[in-house]
Image 1 (tube, rainbow, N blue to C red):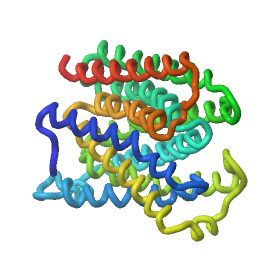
Image 2: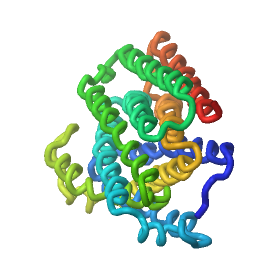
Image 3: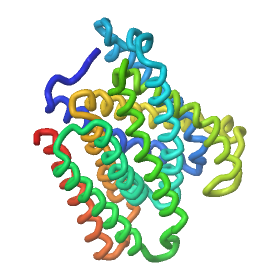
Length: 326
């Protein structure tokens, strides 16, 4: 089983995780006029497929007691269930995040949802596995909170036809963030309790839990959508193959980031790995601002708030990374 042996290697894996988490939603943006509830079925399959591929390669070779098949047999059933439950909760939050992206855009939805999740997840994970400097972690979390406030202020400055701020979209992102922050403790428990899971086993159980959740929550959301009218599976069947491919690709990109984050956590601790990975809103905001032009024509004040958000997230990243050394 591959595991990082130095903090530098773990940090590289977490930064790659951040890029993956902040970039996967671009695949959804490329599916024009395609409902996110339908996109999400392919996305959910994609995250399971890539977690299995990595578990059977990086997580298995060259074998031994820590290989994925051996760990799957020896792990405590409660830990397998804990990882799957974390994935189930995450999935509800992630579906709401994608709904939020539909309503308010990448540059706003990610910072609000993931910023709230960062604060909640770090505090809960650190309580279970206190690894690193609490002071520096706290300072990093404070910077993340400031970034969320700044992006909220920037969004409030949007004006003009079709640019009226969506209160429903903001509330959806807040609820997503509150749920998103609760999955990390389940992962921490699965990796630290008696007869623990390796990161690769955690990822497989986590993504399977997320896929199972789709049959409950995503099916319900198709009937009672947050955006638009109810949609059926006929729309999924009628979608072009390229849309299905984009959904699978989005899931695989996110899945690579998740596995890398869990693997890095075996060295840094879940609280630090999770916190650095949750700098993904900075990546998503860059895509939203510079590629999708979501703040085109906004006021100077809105642009100032955006700059402040980037600075706050960078400071959060630096402080949390230094927390490992302290």
